[in-house]
Image (cartoon, rainbow, N blue to C red; front, side, top):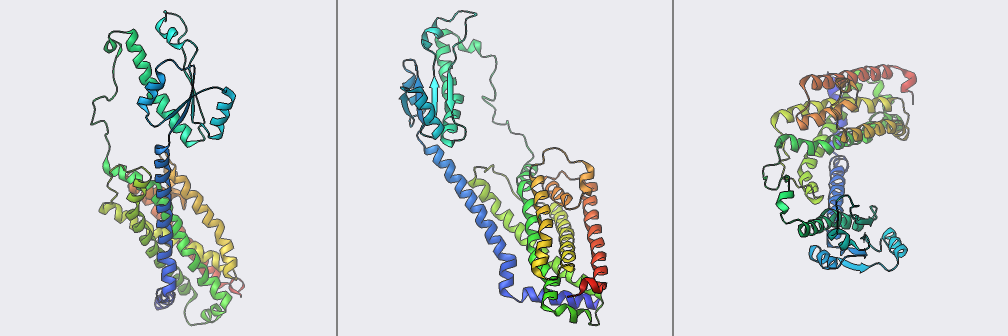
Length: 400
């Protein structure tokens, strides 16, 4: 036990007594993460304001008398033009020079006023470019709002009692239409991104230090003297894994705290301010804490295992990169999970931790699912520790 404590203390001191190391491991990733989130929020907010401030460029073909004024009344900032060259107008929409083309049939008002039962219904056509933000916004505004209001106006000229045609309305007077569990809704907001960032940043935080703990010592020649010391090799293994687990665990707490603190800002900047309370209760915190310890234990074991079979830090980083990419991919897949996960998903290493973190935040994970994830993660970590210990006993593997 004293050997484990001695090795663990040596590795922790190497990190926590170095100010540059503390900054690069614990603070730099947070600064980068917050910077990225702030930048994304700012750019998204700026793009939205730019679209809202844009004066839509709308071309009309065969427009009925008075429609220009009706359109101007609905959207005072739009610029209205009459089509003189149809092909040229379509090219302008394709190239972003115009936003929308509204085509009325010839004699539109005569067809509407003289409509007889069974006759074809006049059709108004709109053309836009969905790949252009301005064009898509103009289409949404005109097609879903202005033209519907114009249709109702013309219909009121034909029918004396408009109320008689209204069979029902939808939410015209329903302030209580939203029914949701606030805690679950908050959890879904956090659960969309938090598990991904936690698992990715936790692994990334341990990766640089972990590869140096074994492969780095091999490369520097200090591993040989450590192996001939009176400390058991199993104690060396556990000391290095536990120290790496503590470092990655502390870094994950810092990352989660920063993520939760800045999530409301990001959601507000991206137009997603739903007035949610992005907080966790004591049960969620306890479950997350235990799971984060297990994840840190597993990731530390994986990184140390990879480093054992490498002779240099560069070689170790090349070995660990595929594992990092796997964690990255599995983290992304949980961000877009919509269906209820099958029970056996919680037995899939690495993937189950992201899935369970998401379930904890949304309060949808069962104790059985949580127990399976925790158990599988700890057992797999313990198995890897055994493999590392065996590798340390092999002179061939530990040869420099």
